[in-house]
Image 1 (cartoon, rainbow, N blue to C red):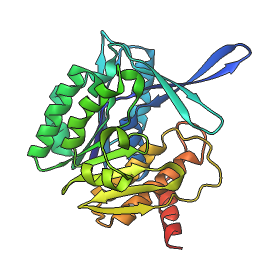
Image 2: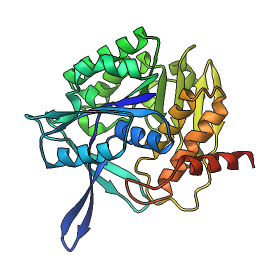
Image 3: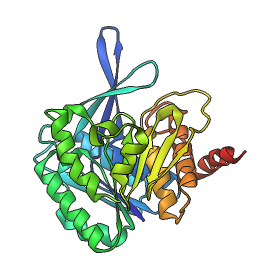
Image 4: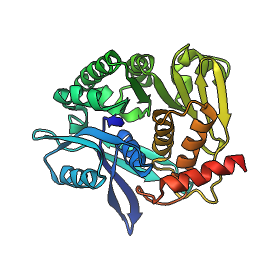
Length: 306
């Protein structure tokens, strides 16, 4: 089983209409999105996070319960509101974020659940937003230590968001510890140069991966890369007739990768193909909840062999 831990929040997607802004509210948060995609793939999966005792928190609890995860724990914070992310989407489907999260709920994760998470999970996937707070880092430190003590794997998606830190240097300093601790790490193309030096992407990936990590790099329409044991693998993107919305593409990719690894797949090329297929399915439809299935992903994977 894969258990995703970290931010669950409301994506407030806005548009200008007759001189005012209108916002549609969707469930979001990178690790929650990964868990939802794992469920689409039929993977044993779960989620742990925290929301406020407010209307948005009630909405997120309802959405999470409808996923029918194998494990679900949502802490309700009486003194903190649910985190909001205001999302603007441009004509090409690219997103920009601004967060409403001063002392909000997402970082206040339940320490008492750590032993249960580690007992149930084969892979623990950790979201990055809570790491901007002391409480979130303390939770992550204990979770990672317990996961490794039980001989299980930690996955970490950098998912850097500039407006939750005072500067890029602070984020690099904080995140480097978790990049080093994780067994599986994902970067976007923009994030990799922030955290690794080198003359090429391949050199940077090898430096982060060392001898034992699996490091992933998403390249948008150009596909993705994986580094393991000093070897680099690169697979082109799956075919997409039209990109409708890039929201959640990286999370869908991560779900495909984790499902493959947890299922015992050892061929990095096949792992990347499944990740790319899931990412392609996510961008081919509008909205936060595109409809796709394990069978759809498998069909796209077969296109790589055609």
